[in-house]
Length: 439
Image 1: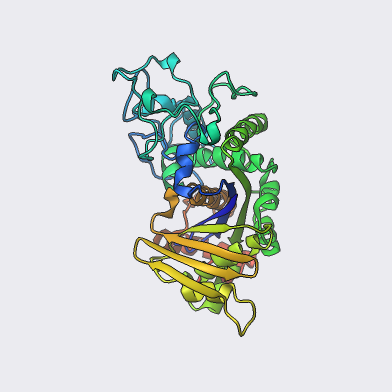
Image 2: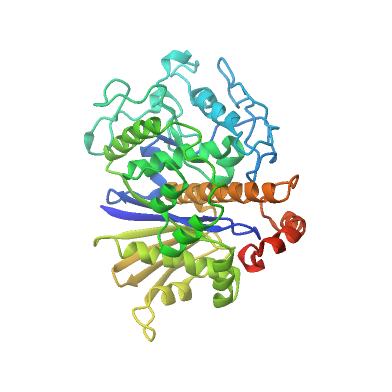
């Protein structure tokens, strides 16, 4: 058995709202690489949201408008239908993306053929028999579907599972959070994040419980709960709690049959005051991101029992060399930096072996790290938390400055928003450092 930690962030570029850095912690069978996880779990988890025909911008009080259902790249009978307009400016009205998720027929969007090349009838496709369209090793036809899993076990198929899959089960989408959000809206993030979180034994029925479940440090929790107390969106908002529990049980069981377990999900929420302080201490924003990501990993390592550990991260701002950052973060004392052995340092991937206080750890920093399931799930948790935070932000200021357009917090629009709230901000006595990030 080996532990795998995937790390990614959301909110690095904006000037408003929090930077969120998250980690997903997994137990994997010895010898299993993170890039093989989608193949083994292809009946439960897919790496590609269904393709839609339209890309929408934000009209609600989140940071992007949830997408309108469109045509999939392959249709064998019917297309998803939108039940609501995506032009609503009601901050809680993203139900059209929820309807989309529940109406999406993933099997219709995947090139899934019978051995003779014909397309099977709709009712012949089991919802747990999907191919993973982004995995070159994933089955593309019924002939390719593996009939035995590692150790000679039989994969859970419809009717053979000790617990039947939830009705009309659709695989969870675990992918780059920006892609998921663009195609499925916040509901697409929420379904995966809350189901996977429930699989670790933690259930969130409101913002406070969600923060308490994932915040890794007291400062993250205190800052997240202090802001806009009466303006937080409902959690969960896209599906009922009993459905989350049912899905979580099924997915966790299916992963366990492959020897895979999600151990935990953790986040550091860096709101503007803390962000500014950390940037000043680190010297620049990129270095701050690297240090905070590695500090999160260091804290998680201290909670794990002994055993091999591999850490997979998306690259930080184009950085290719991490040796000195690793040596400083995992130093055993101020005068004794950690021993770091560089294995590879290229534009595509940087690999290191690090001797930490808890043992040897392999680090991989990848360009496009979200292609790995552990990193993708961390990315989705970070994005989900930031989207909730930005909706609360926009709700608060919409009440304080009627008619103000919502913002995603990115530099150009953030300056517009900052100017429009300036008078009311001064009247409320809110300091600039509490809302405006220095970088």
